[in-house]
Image (tube, rainbow, N blue to C red):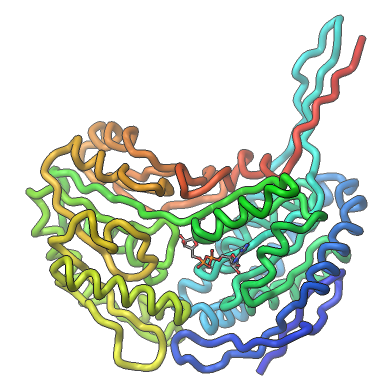
Length: 467
Ligand code: NAD
């Protein structure tokens, strides 16, 4: 078994405690993983604080080179990282490889950004400049659905801006992150990047820590609310990327055969464990039966298996808690809807659930009103255009949404009326590092990616000089 260590102050160190990490496809132990104590978290924060002045003073162009070097390391070790990721997360190896390469791509693109000083006024009275300064020590808290990709969203802009970091992966998926840390620890000056792990007990300590200036958090809305509450005591900056209950609206003019594969992918990618997955599908009554049939055909032909097996399209749910939660959604679906594909947990070891399509279901049920975060899609019938927009917006979430239509002008009109941070037209789940991303309503606060995301890792400073 490979051994894993924490990264604190430029050294790989054992955890004060250990915890097992399970393979969700077999429930076997993949590895014993270090678990940090509160003292080790404090040591990581102290190392990041000590490294901060020199890193902040390093020219941005130099910091950029370090991040690009890390991208080289990621790509050179993609196969190993992808195998570790599949073993702890469950996703098919092809998807894990795409995640690692995507992480490298985010490193490269985000490293290419700039933080130019802006002259606001240069007159006989005064010269006013706007500078973007780093914040100090930043804490990054990561969920278990895309452990490496989401690290790729946060680490490059945080370091490029001149901050130093303490990263904490989720307790059930820490291994690929620890291996990444080991691979890049020789690239960066010591203390600039620290990686610790926990058993869901140190996130709260990080958000309260007096020496952490900002928390960049991705996870559930419930935990995001806790982060916001704990961060208040020190008025930490926070970026929160939280849960979603994305509505996807299919208009009456679509070709069902044409749109069904994209809808299926948008709902079931990563076994539905995507913040931005389609979680409620609204279909106009005129194409309802056909869309349901097409989705059933795809679901029944989808290979669900161990992610290491060739041909696997969907892996297991990532952890037992999520598996049990999704089984609760299946019970709800059986009670309140008509299950037309899947509907069951699979009779084998591991946390496997059949891709499930549920029709004749509506609001007022758990499956429609809550975030399932699993491979169970409710298909809801509608007849009136204004009514469906009202129903799509009748949620506290506002992460993403999509509209499917053969008439782009109509689709744009619908898109403009949906309360969500991203609305796709004739696709779902298309993300890239140059396209800003963030949630509306209780799906988050702040933005990631692009210049907008980079700016969130900085403090605006105005220098206003007399003439
Ligand atoms: P989670 O909120 O349970 O955990 C996320 C992280 O927060 C983990 O690292 C966890 O250890 C840590 N944590 C736990 N308690 C904490 C506390 N009190 N303070 C600070 N940190 C704490 O989320 P999850 O179950 O790992 O992920 C699934 C959820 O994440 C879903 O709701 C999904 O929609 C959401 N998500 C959102 C995005 C996005 O970008 N908006 C992306 C991926 C996942």
